[in-house]
Image 1 (cartoon, rainbow, N blue to C red):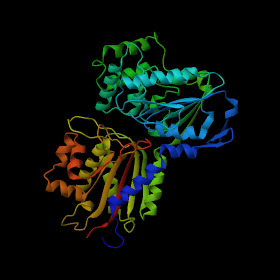
Image 2: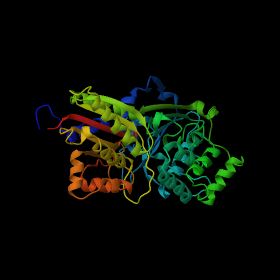
Image 3: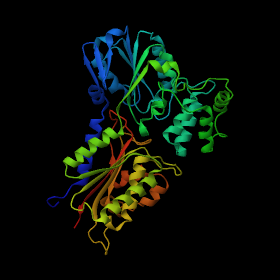
Image 4: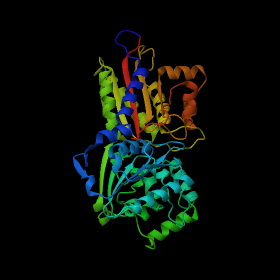
Length: 460
């Protein structure tokens, strides 16, 4: 490697590592919640612990145990009792917090048991009590209490069918909220008239509090009609279990109440703070990239849509930047964040991040600035990567994948057709064979996905 050149895979790992550390759940709690004596300060708002008889804690989502552990240390002896959903076998050092196992991405009986225990704890709180609700992505599946006659099986069917159809998180949660006894503000109703303070790590675009964890402690603007519309949009209404029809039709006719709406007096006692999000991670990534000698450019802080279309868009943007001649002396780090979708048509393995990386590799290799030809003998050195910040990309053990021209060369030598793997939605298998899977294991956070494109000096 010549002086001044960059080892892009190594530096991509450094940039991702910095971003993940910055949005680690325990770090966000430590930095976002300050205590002096009985006074808690959160984003300029002060809460006097002496004004409450008891303090409860509920933590849900993939970052729940880390958020709960950190806040428990801050609260110390003032914490009366708490519950956190955890991975099976996981423990929290605080004796006042019970760890309950729960499932993801599809709920199971453990999710139902966790929901019941959490609702019961919330209902114990009185008018002079304070309930901290710590929320991170993944809680919609982890905490599941079907509205009768809907069943766990029918909610699993709806979740799985919408995920496979490519529904976005807002659509998915619109359906889930209207089949639930805990989402759409109903956990806040269970805690009322206690005061509720939500500390949120956002995993949705725009930090939409209605969508994060399906809004258990926030009002909901969607309706039973919207839930039916979502199912019809993806051709699932007539295929749905009969219990799903029964609940939604009962809501449409007014026989059962809607989710809680804006203006409900319950929310006068609810205060919410977003303590970390995708933008936090992007800014940290940009700062690390700059320190490594790249010129960082944040292209988008809330991308959405099909992974393949996003790959085409970002490859085109990189192509245009290189062809324009601007910034050619400085290596570039293009960054984006959000949550893409995949419409599953094949029977392969993969998630939205590996699918994006594979589609992006194909797009880059089509373009002369990144693929050596007679016309352009010295192609630009590039790397494209996409990472799920929770450490898991779909039903795989990978967080995502990275790819460059060397990936394409290895694949060709091994007889792997990137096009065929992409066509059958088998991106995980492609990168397992060609190299490039990003394996982080479970992380201490969940702020959607991060994407980066590194453009180094032209290779000789």
